[in-house]
Length: 91
Image 1 (spheres, rainbow, N blue to C red):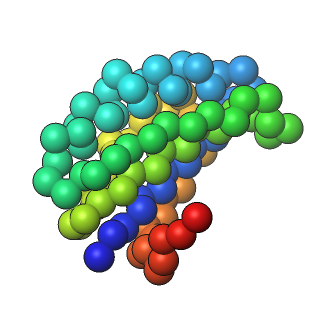
Image 2: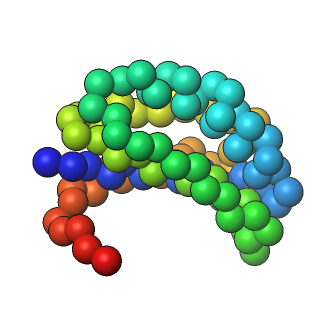
């Protein structure tokens, strides 16, 4: 079974680059060698009306490993997380 683990955090307007740097430098190294990790991608949505967002989507073939909590100074609220089971693959 494949699982897509999604992590999303919102920053204050203009602070997305600092959170993205933390994700790359501190959070990803905690999971990149975890068993079952197939792929991990990081996305940014800058300049949103209520702040910037950083999203991490990791595909797992086993139990997902959670990302660590970011420093509170980098986020406007605690991150949201979801796990999705793959139902199908197609073009």
